Amino acid sequence: MGLFDFLRRNSNAQAKELPQTNETKEEKELPEIPKNLFIEDNEPVEVKQEVAGRTDVNGIEAIYAFLQKDYEEKGYNDAIVNPDDSHLKDNIKVIRYDLEMVVERVLNYYDNLILDIESNINARAKAGLFDLVEQLKGKKEMVIKHINKVKELKEEANDEESITNRAILSYKNGFMKGLSALTHTNLLNKNL
Image (cartoon, rainbow, N blue to C red; front, side):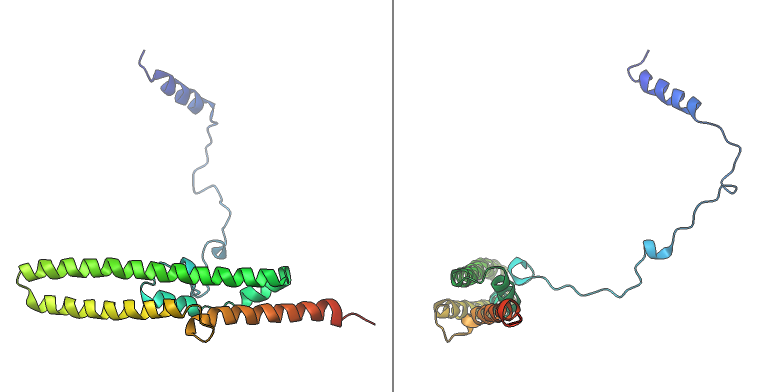
């Protein structure tokens, strides 16, 4: 008796238990499955990712994408859920912290990019690829300009008149609209 003979015995017993039918595959009628159950005829819809979770945007473009995001709807919904002024202030702090994290992530990205460019410059110079070295130096200068712009945006982050305040203004506008809608719904639309 072999080690796995018990498996063969079970499969032989199961085969004996199955009823034998004289029907062939052609004689059996299978139910028809509608096409729309598995195939979608609609055109594909373009899906945009949220900026905070995006990994496809690097560098200064990540900061601009964060600042261009529309926070008005979030502010509106937050006001409907919790119309307290402290809630507004807390969420503004969260937006500022998120911006700081994006800026730090961009600076880290550029620092790593500079290191990669410098190591490639050294390696290609040793190989005698001077045209490529000049291209890499140009790329490095562009990265340094971007780093300076990011540092400038970081310094302006607390200035009420800077471009970095756009996200906060958008959130405040939405919050105020939410408060207004809440007031209209709860008080002004009541019968007197």
